[in-house]
Length: 424
Image (cartoon, rainbow, N blue to C red):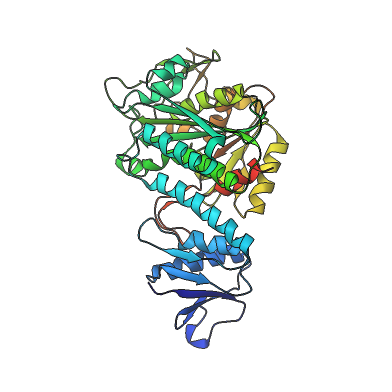
């Protein structure tokens, strides 16, 4: 496999290349920086270079920074075919990039995996084993599945997953590099719906095709924890992955069902395709029980978030302004994009039910106006009062088709932000 050398330059291309931002000289490609957003330009240039059938590159030259090398790798990555990016810079920079790439590749592989190969239990096992390989005896975990979920009073996860022959599962993992009784710094919660048919509120075929990505939240928080551990994280973190398949069968949960959660909140099911918030409710209660200083959940939760912020941002929500500011600050340090959307106390009541404390959505397309904030308001009911909490709706974690910035498939966008927040 021949290696193409990639160099950044601020010089204009030779006239024969016109106004192109990429030119070639033998086995060297030049990216001609000219845009206000240089990282975006580098990522787009990487997509163009990869589209030429080039699969192994060496980054070279003085203009490469940590962020620009990472942006290049994001654009160069595809879901199929072998490829390799060789980093430049000092040893520390190359080590950081290698750790990032391994974590992002882990998340991408999980998200891009076929639903047949990635059942709920297998997802939990893959996540646990990867983190165990990194953390050794600092990592302990349990996987609860099927009827065991009812014994733990994880009602939502059991209801959503019971329609599948392959049981739902909750991964409870503890990374503790400190004393046995150390305080939990952060609890992570990830939505792990390995396939989402929509249940009886069935999705159309074109909407169902990409639903292998609906465990993107679980992949994101797992990869973030692994990345932080590789960077030497010295804080205790607990991880909860809520894993299930949302399928249709004679045993599947139905519209009109009422779920009574461990904290006593009753929920009427008005849309079986609003299942992510039902499983996260269990994870958030479990996370609250840890006494963690901060709870972060991540989920491919709503189309409304994508409508609001597009697919190059992740939407963030929190009752605490300082938590939103922390997320924005940490995202900026790793060149990822987050944007806060509204969350007020009255959002908890935006999905009313005449039969229960709340419904899991509103009985209209997309959950009606403000759907992403209403979903966050629903989740807020399951976070202990006063706890610092960040909800990340992963609008940018998956590209259903190729774009100028991303190949089709998982992007791992969000992994670096959450890893940085763990290291706060």
